[in-house]
Length: 197
Image 1 (cartoon, helix red, strand yellow):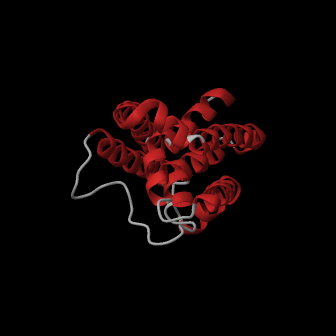
Image 2 (cartoon, one colour):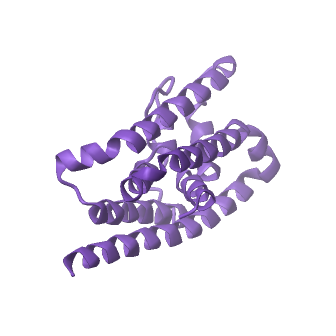
Image 3 (cartoon, one colour):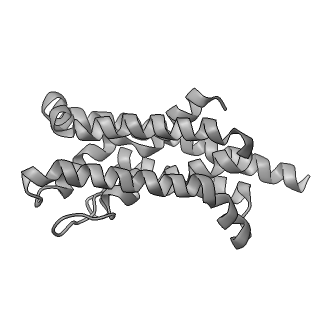
């Protein structure tokens, strides 16, 4: 995997366009003058979580006795479930979480930006090729920067695209994420079968 493909993959699993409605909804009860500060704080908390998983996650995997194929399959399953809910939203089980007061860490930083799939992705990148840590760090920073820019421009994008435009983009992102999830699943299964052989 190249630096560019890793950055694009991380950007896709962070799903900033799909997260715009969730961020705007979660900030409804936050005073307008504090909203920018809250969003920036949550984005930086998400970055810290992703960096921790990037550099320390492989050691946690060893302690827990988790294999790379298992992580790949688990990340693929979680991402597939999220992507399917993006394409076929349910009123009974919405992706949006109820927020009372000012959000802190949950749900904006985790799981909206640093969700299970993005955390699993950085873990997989580092566990497969730890010698390329500088490239993975650059890919993560590039994806996070692009994701942050889109989320910070959320209100503007919502006015520009409209509700239906955002829904259409979310469905499209869901279709792309289904493909990414299936790829993660197949790669994890292939690695497992190779280890067994």
